[in-house]
Length: 50
Ligand SMILES: [Zn+2]
Ligand SMILES: [Zn+2]
Image (cartoon, rainbow, N blue to C red; front, top):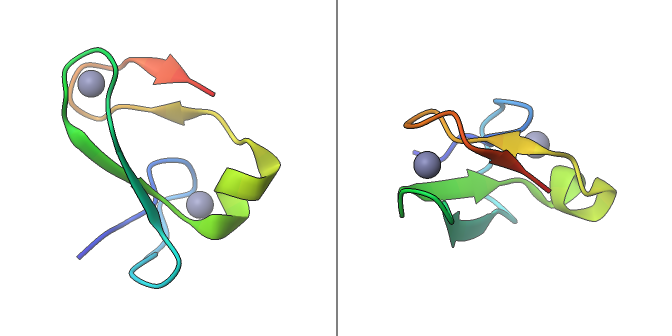
């Protein structure tokens, strides 16, 4: 199951997957947060970015 790295809610629908630029961990972000450009933080290494 995918949970959004920005808001933490379930985002199995309409989520965008991308890799953490720092550690390559697979992250998902919901459409909402993507559109808003919400910052994320990687749960693996704490990297944060737009
Ligand atoms: Zn979100
Ligand atoms: Zn990371």
